[in-house]
Figure: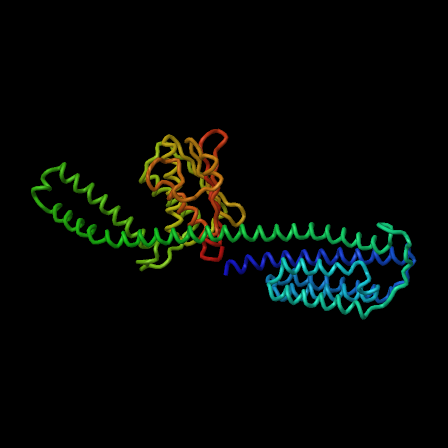
Length: 426
């Protein structure tokens, strides 16, 4: 599905190139007819030849409407467009000397364009049709009275016409094949990007399955530990010892946090959703996420500015909350002395900017943030946090930009369309 969409975009661009080429052909034919008729004093069937040019203009107008109002362009449509161009060229050659006209080699221009743009069956059909037209023009055509120059070499009128045809074909081929190749390279680059994105998303799915499985496996031992701790808290021997009682209380608190983490993993993977979606607002969601992070990490200096206005109703997303926590954790690890977070609204987009006073991002990581296992931290598994952040943002239709601040430190900018947060299509 993705590759088909990419191919359709390339075909639409190629249709636009054919339209531009047809404009050049129409103008070139007008100039040639005027020069031959007025300057060389060669009699031409002007009405019929101008009618062919009018047909090309009408075809181009229809093609432009087609280009603007429909997304998909098929191989058959491009084939028919080229066939109509071949038909118009055949008509002009029939009216101006047939196969003796030096512009007969313009058939090759149509074949070369077809070889680049069309499927194999279409190209060979085009070769057969142009060959038949060439042969037919040797027998069926209108003769024109052309003064033959007795000079040899380049000054012969027919040789000059062939040279003009060669020059015109060469220039058009270089100009348009270069642009067509650029379209094809752009399509290939887009396909490579989509393949990379697909591989990354598969990696995320595998990590999600692993996390979900681990959460299920941890559920039983955590429940067992909770039962044991509850029994210990009721034992007189332990309750009389204040230090042990305090230790038991701390262990219960940490155990409750572990169970909360396991529940969060299952919720984010689509399981255990007993109460359905939780509706909130952007400001309340951000305030809650920041409050939870601040209570857990207790940063010594944290500047938080929630300037998002006007407020917008959204659905609470645990994965997005984890994204914010992950970025703040990275900033705090790089800069324990200070972390800043600014939230604001730009049109229909939520913008979050996290700043720190750490060493900043190296140029290679800043240019392509979120690549797995690429990090400045010298430990196993480093870089996966930002990788997961980028993929969650991509799922919501958002993006991440990373860079270094002029005053020192790193800056991470998250952008999210509000439609993706409210349950709509990003």
